[in-house]
Length: 338
Image (cartoon, rainbow, N blue to C red; front, side, top):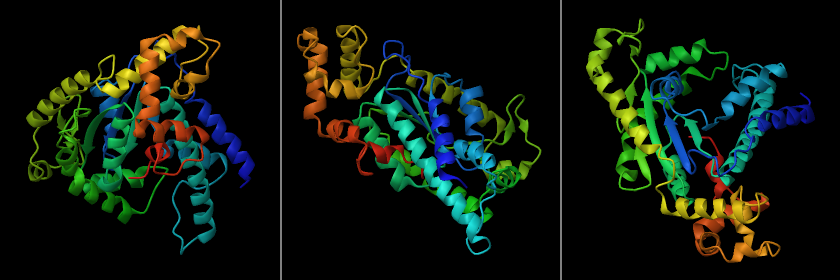
């Protein structure tokens, strides 16, 4: 595998995420939706096609890059066991780490522009995800959480039918961990005014959502054992749609997000569009001597004060501009494990 070629392809993939939308036209600034669920849960389908999430949200999921890059370099999408095939396992993990880093950098660039984001992950690791969610809120983001699941055997079967496969026991363990930990999120985060639960109980995706008949692989006994019914599923989806619509306000509810957004918009106008499209500009606004209006605009001044006096903002934005920041800063938010 030629590492330089792989890097070039990663950069090409990255450009797809970096089409910058003006902060003045950003319809859902400072919004991030966490999608939690095990393999085969169907969370992407439900969020996009049933709940109708707007298409301007950027998805952060390095697995999508894996599915594009691995075949281009003739790397198997079926993850190898270190004992059985150490050479293939080494290649896969090296390429995967590179793609994870590229995805993290792309996500950081999007966060700097207050872009609406989707974090697509299993949700199995509460201890890692909960602090990241809190960190997003400190950065000014409103955080939405949606949870979708399926029975363990269906998750296993979905993994087996995919070109990109991981060890079956790992898939099953991830499923068990997610179901065990799913209730912890509401317990820990529901009181945070900047966190919205689209649903607190995982939606069990047992049905053909066109007519709510059971999927062929789901038996009535399985449905009953899980405490679900088509009536409950219908009620949950209506509630989830209402909650998502309420979450998708045009402006952030987060007070920090409001302050930063107003400052960024004002900076764009004060500089004739030359500055203000990202938080990095706001962090450096005190140096823009060629634009005297910057120092007279109260929204920009409030934004600059927030950037320099709020320790969370400084740690996550100003320090990260060097791209040498450790995982404790915004770079830690961008990692997609858990």
